[in-house]
Amino acid sequence: MDNRKDLGAAVAFLRYLRGWDEKDLVQAAGIDESLIPLYEQGFEAPARRTLEQMTAAVGVSFKVFEEHVVFARRARAMLTDGLRELQLPDEDIVIDEIISGTSREIARMIAPEVVKLPRRLDGPLASIE
Image 1 (cartoon, helix red, strand yellow):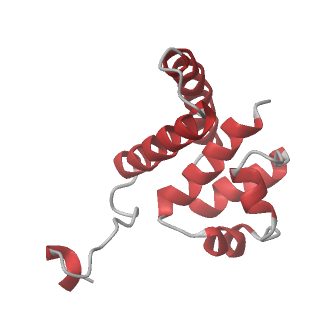
Image 2 (cartoon, rainbow, N blue to C red):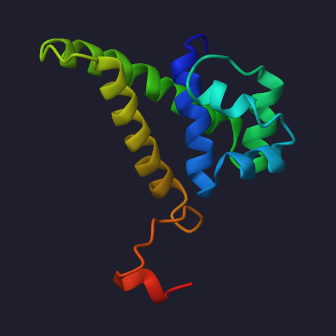
């Protein structure tokens, strides 16, 4: 697990699994709040112990977490090659958005009963608690 951006995508994936914001993950895992954005944006790489704390906090096996890191790494490599041909001004931002969106979708598939779906106040889900 050497790519910080891929680790960051996987850390965000942990939050998506529970529909948590950063504070929820911080409280459940007992880690420093200032570190989550650094991890998720790929500026810092969490230690394995920290990763294990986060996976345990959301109730996911470390193996699932590692598999998501591998997914993010492969997706980033494929997207980089494909998007480079389109000559986008900032392909890294596009790749990060695609991986982030895919992470949310994978989280919904793995744990649909716990992932919170966004609710529109005027939509049909507005009255469902």
